[in-house]
Length: 179
Image (cartoon, rainbow, N blue to C red):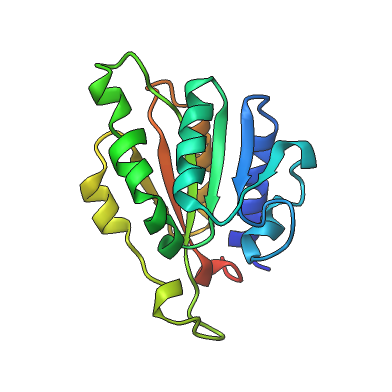
């Protein structure tokens, strides 16, 4: 793999060093997509394999965050994160608003824009909904990682931010073999 992929792996290892983090999603403990391979340095006890229930996963992540855990909740494609939009847009994003700042759950959301080469996976696996979600989200910050130099600063910000915001980090699978 390339520098972009290697830097993602480095970022996951950096996050794993924090005792508050817990990684959850599909294929975080067993191989099933390329994001799994970025987790090889993350200890097994910090990984929680989730069922194919994306809305539940985001709600579960929000609950963990309200208890002081920093969930790193992983969605291998934007197309799958759409299924969690209810929990993301109506709950995680709005809790700081409706609680008047009393509750500020911090979730790190990892999502990828699916690659279209060397094999096109079909339109339902490579859409990019970043612009739409930037418009819908009021308290969750969306950060795009276009190249390898964007990755570590983005994940460091997500982990170390003191404003209590959640962060949605967008990676580009087309770049896994590049820069």
